Image (cartoon, rainbow, N blue to C red; front, top):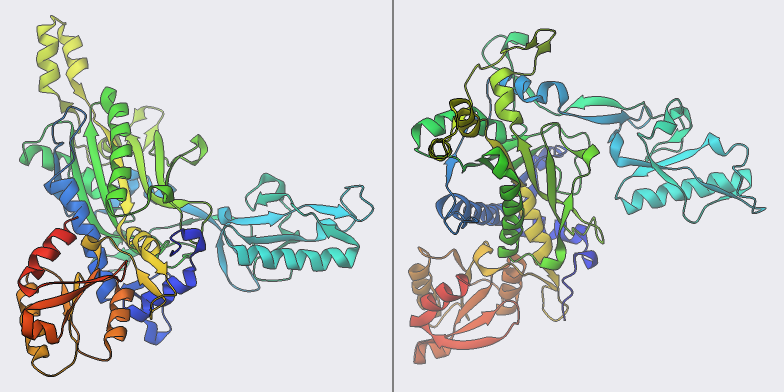
Length: 548
């Protein structure tokens, strides 16, 4: 039985298949590539578009049923990648959107400081447990969540320990590089890719936004930024949508689009890259209703990922601790997936954040505060919402004018389910990758049929005797409704192998019985079982199977 646990899968093998079958290529590969950027090949583009279209369908065109039993109200948006730079000042990205980084002066490599760990524990051979003289001369760093890096650091530590007559503890104490104990002690730390202590600089903040210039003159007055998220474009258009679309709170604005972050250490294939696509929803609701909607979207988004065919056992919720919340967030939960490079642990797939009224307030009054109080340094737009239903209920209850205003006028709170479309591609690639020694390809991609890049392969058994013509006619009848490929090259086994690696769920073979009896062979990707159906039933068969 094929093993589908991500912990048993090789990331190197998945990356190799992606290149071999046209899912993902290194960007600018003929020039040696560029770190943190990837190109999506024909199959990868189709897979990504299938995920994108499914998200848009179930978020905007046919949104989920809310807690009251009625469909929620969500509209779509496509905002500009480059906005007025003052928007990013107001949102806090110019001043606070950064990661701590360290550089190695020997190797010239750069690391996220919060993703580097350091071994600091030693055992003395006499069993006393005291730190030996000279042990402080070496503290060995390694990349977090990287078994190879840890193994290399331990090997270097053991080499040094032997030299000074001690051993490395079987379970050494591990501290993050940013630990306060390391203040002034960087001269003793051996970086992940060197054997020389003291080559790491102390952490410093590194802004993640890509800068560009608008217009002919390249100076600070023309500076702009590539957006690091799509959310701010939604907040900037909140009033426009209210004024033009006849929506009322609670409602949502959804957007899919490219975002850019100058990651210090892009890694793990397309998991963390510098150019990526986001699927973001900003849900605007009354402040006192926000806990209800936070809980609703948390579970709704988990159900959505399961609808893509992702196993429940590979998905978990993880609530953010208070000290890891973003500057705008009141609370946040991540939906995490068990990637091969995190297994048996999990890594982020989607975040559902309670942003409060931070963003709408920020764009109203900015983030400038002096002794006289808040200044309207930014848009001066009025983001306050008049809830007419609450206003009417307050009047009927006989409340005073002041009480009516307090009950019916508010800045909406925002619940934000935000997921990476390109990270979703990675999850489906990892989930689908299935090794199986019983088939010629030794591996197949077990996509849920509706998300497979190619839905059907059409094969003439041999390239003669009228079979190619019948296969071509079948293909022409299916191509406008399903993504199909017709293939007459090489043996039928090699064609099955190619389709297995592409994740094609069904292959239809035209053979001698087709010519005499009007039936074709259907081969199921997962079970490799075959059955015969009438050639006139192929379209109905696919429609039923792909819709499952």
